[in-house]
Length: 444
Ligand SMILES: *Cc1c(COP(=O)(O)O)cnc(C)c1O
Image 1 (cartoon, helix red, strand yellow):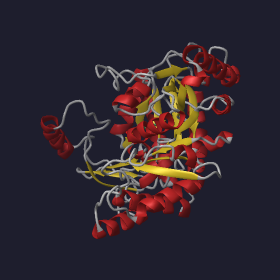
Image 2: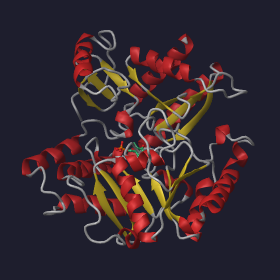
Image 3: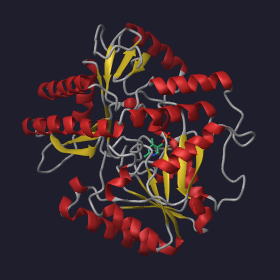
Image 4: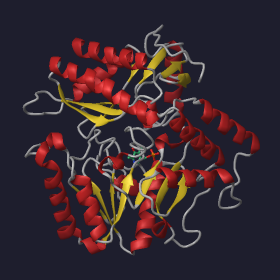
């Protein structure tokens, strides 16, 4: 384990004087469009703690947006990546290949759902993986249309902006967007007009009807969905929705793509969130948690789909960088050794019990949802009207930050507080973080 002591410590204002100094330099040098949730500059991080340049130690409920599931300095990640750095930093897999890339693809074939023959291609970022999933699906089906869902998030490149639902801040002013992208309803149980019980089948019927009538199933190359929607507010599609969409895709020769970039690699207490309803995607995109903080992403899928692309049609200079691959092998080793699926399930148990007790005291908590260590609360002005309460989410996040707990917000209406602790966080820190949230509610 990393040497960062696993205890919260607040010794200055947050952000402290050194962070403020760095922030002033940053404002002069870094483009204004690049934001930060909390401008506290990091000195070191590991386990469940981020230590800043002023010596404050924050409890981490963000994991750098669901990336550092194994911690930000996991022993196996650091060891393997350091050894690889000594050997060589880069050759480009498309020029002269190396074993680590192959090993990561073998691990992906083993860990992703389904026992069919699978192949993978590696990239640098989630958006790049999603772009490549679309390229592969179009090449395989010889069709063009791509179907995505309300509240979906798939990245910030041109094609993935088109696939993403929310305008501000992701799309505003950045058009024109890629064509042949169509958006249909998702089974958002908490806000479904006829209630959560009816939501799965009704939303699936609406989505399928729109695809059939507005696009034509024969024109659709791919249907892309996050099995738990991340940026959109940790929405778990109501039961029955995903299987119905998968069946429709299978019946119509459409490639079903599970975007597990946020929900994958033990985050929801399973290797992949789509396992929850026994779904076997044709293609699966991964990134974020895959490599313990090093930049790596992948598309994994049925061998015949992956191999439909002509030689040289996929790749990129850095895709599957050897240091990132070594990091991924270290992260996967850690996930297995420490049973991080079990840890994620335990985090869910602790969090949901505490949050449910809070909901009884604070009716502003309209909904508690998510799976594993991907848990969120949706805040509303009145539980009867469910009017989104974004100001409360912002104020609560700020109050938590001041006490040394890093939390993130999300959601189409900006009214969701999301909790994504590293899966290796100690239970004492987890409970201390929840105490801070409870106190923040009491004060607001
Ligand atoms: C973060 C994310 C992406 C984009 O990944 P980047 O590495 O930021 O490009 C795509 N899809 C989902 C579901 C994500 O959470």
